[in-house]
Length: 191
Length: 286
Image 1 (tube, chains in turn red, green):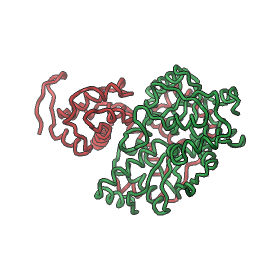
Image 2: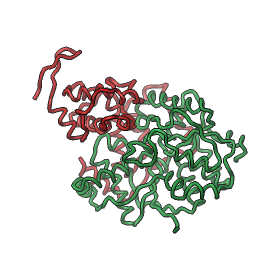
Image 3: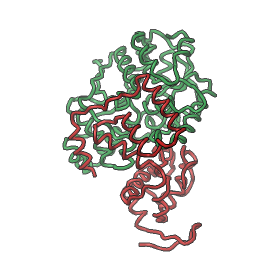
Image 4: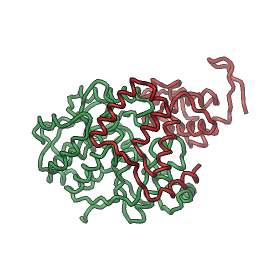
């Protein structure tokens, strides 16, 4: 069911099923949030978020689905668990963020960050090799994200890469897991 | 007391970017008579990317490793704080929900009861071996070393899942380092996040967080920061924008204090971007 709300953005559609879906997926008690701001004050990456965590929770409660799922908040979230640990109402905020990430991906909303690409590349390595092939992850992500074209960052990273390599900190060959096929099957089964 | 024995789960980073952690873990374990039998054919725990995008997969990947340990009749010792939380979370969720456990078994194609115990190496060395025993075995006290023990997120949060120490002011690593003769400082950023999974995707955020942590440690008078996580190491050692604080794994210091050979610590100490060698030399420890 949808209703029209007047918000600071003007008229906005609220989808009441949205809050319920987030609650069902995350098992978090969203309705308990009374906007005390403890989550946002301790959040290390709040300063880069479109909406700080307590604001996002309020928006979920109100059913502002589009604004929530298009925001960068849950992609920037580090899952550091500071918010959930300090929440006086025991709201598992990171599980809410996880649910929003899954829902955004399911709807094909990639948002404005490159985190979906990073997570996809990371899990692609695990699916292929059974473990993370760190050098492969760095190279594939750098190319796929277009960071190869940002000369300054690339030079810094190239210098760092060489220094790490010289210290024997970057294995060149991918790791081996005998149960690779088994792990690939797990990825298929958990889709 | 019989010999302490665990199934060892190093995690992906210890085979590559955190090789020095793996080397020093084995040295410390040997010097403390702890047997670490690497889990046969272990796989990645899925890390942040797993739980961020696929809940069931984020349980199945650690559960496969736990099933391997169960088959071998061993409890699990984990080196990486991020893997540690994924393993603990898996047990936590599977133990309270049998339907979910069966679903995860179906995804894995293997049985897992949920009964394998998971411990971080800090707990095994600091609690099971114990501070008194470590104190007795110290050959080279880390005298004059003033360190900031850095716990970050996943050792202590969520506290009901990791059950390792106080969530805001943990002391386990501090006490372990003190038992080895070092001094540890009180500082503000002990459990602040290093930026974790944003390592490659948002270097700007990682650099700010790393800078805050390093500055706080320096302000408190620390000569180095000590971690128990290869991902904290990767961020802290490679993303310092202004400072050059040496970052060490706690096992590098326990290894050194317990009398590791130069041929061992000589290898691992050289693997850091911000070298700890000058400060250790200055204090006459190497």
